[in-house]
Image (cartoon, rainbow, N blue to C red; front, side, top):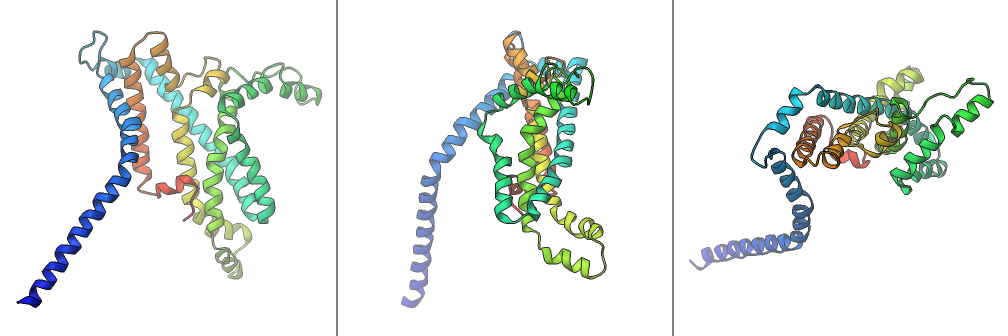
Length: 297
């Protein structure tokens, strides 16, 4: 009888210790959870509530029906996705070869080039955007150098249009693609590529059959990050687009500043947030989202 009571006492003690440990863990994590609720959950919930407030202050779906009925809203969403997709494609074309170049370099040289990749992060987006405005305008340095070298005869319009917007956004987004791809490339076992070569595969075939598929998770994660960030861009298209490239974020600002319509602006924000959430949910089925931070396999 006494022996059967000992396991019961041990089980009760272990259960009490586990409950105490969970309570302590909750106490340690409570400040972080409270911060997330204050700075993220409450603002998003308030944004959602405001999106259903009509012009008369009552509950209404007019902010959402307006986006469906007006062609201008559909055009803004189309431009937003077009700019985001093209920027992502250009980032892949420019960033993947550069990341491959870094991965093949000795560590000391690769670190020097990595500093150049990270250097733009030390300058604000606004400063970099206005720097491109100075470089790309008709009297800017790029036009002057091109004319002096005979590349073209007259100044080319590279700002206040789609071209300037894409150039500025590509410069800002490129590191977000290079870092995950580079991290994945460094995690690739080079012996697998050597094994393919020893089995008779040419360097080109070994790259496309072995190396490239192994780097696809990092490439997908980087492209996803670039695309999601591009959806919410404001400063670069506003400055380099010259009012001709209107994205969703710019429409949100105009709804507040020009029309003081918080409901319409909130509805746009909610739709953009839902779209980004759906994209991330769908992408999570193919790649681990922790690779967005630059992790490997």
